[in-house]
Image 1 (cartoon, rainbow, N blue to C red):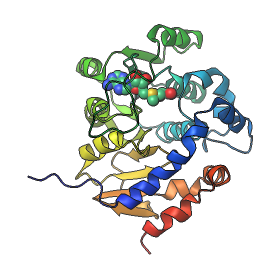
Image 2: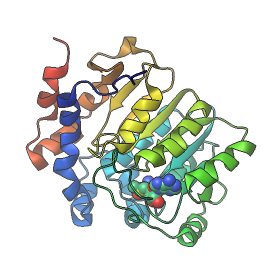
Image 3: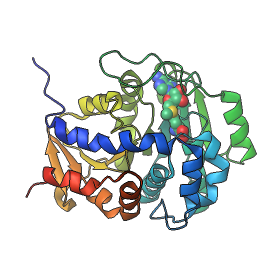
Image 4: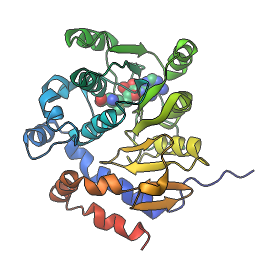
Length: 301
Ligand SMILES: C[S@@+](CC[C@H](N)C(=O)[O-])C[C@H]1O[C@@H](n2cnc3c(N)ncnc32)[C@H](O)[C@@H]1O
């Protein structure tokens, strides 16, 4: 039987992916990001304004994620604070986003664990058909260094670091794990890597729990393809975030969403993005991108 299409409106997906292509050179430059973090007009996290700025110094050399996306991740953590279950991250690199999530739990007095999974060997070989723009071995980090940082930052009671390829670590972890997941952070860039973790963890995400996809609209299409293939037929609502991030809430229904683009059985909600005026204004100032105008033609009239 022919597989159903997961992307029908190619132009819409190109528009979703355009902001990252335009900004990633800037957002990967420490001096640009530092300036951004210093700008007090940006709260980054809507629910914990100032949190990213306050903790930036301790994670800035340990993360590849810009403050807009980190702010969104923390907003999801706050949103699911009353949902049962731990936090799981697939793709931790030097630990930046994982350390930040653990610090947010500590700040808010939330009793949850953070499980970080990484090869510490960088990316595996990208898939020739599904991945664009990535190279084997990039984002290599040191397991011992991360474990040391976790201890130095006093987070060893919250964070567990799982070292190895997802193929070797996720199955054995799940065979003895009896909990649920309230926040799943998928940040492993590639098609096969996403397939090696997301389908295994997704069933454990509690109803109302959040899944944040860091690389969904990066234009590489690997993470996006694996996610859409797995979720096909489940009618999920995918919330477009600061490029290239996207997230979903398990079991969420469509009735409260206003700005929704339907494509290939998936609902892409732009509501949260359109409310994120500081990001949209920054994008406009930095790149001349009027994201809301570019996406408006895809919304039903
Ligand atoms: C973009 S980095 C993660 C960034 C991190 N979250 C941060 O705060 O900067 C992607 C990570 O995924 C890991 N990774 C990718 N595929 C993997 C796999 N199949 N098994 C284990 N780790 C993998 C890489 O080693 C790399 O550290």
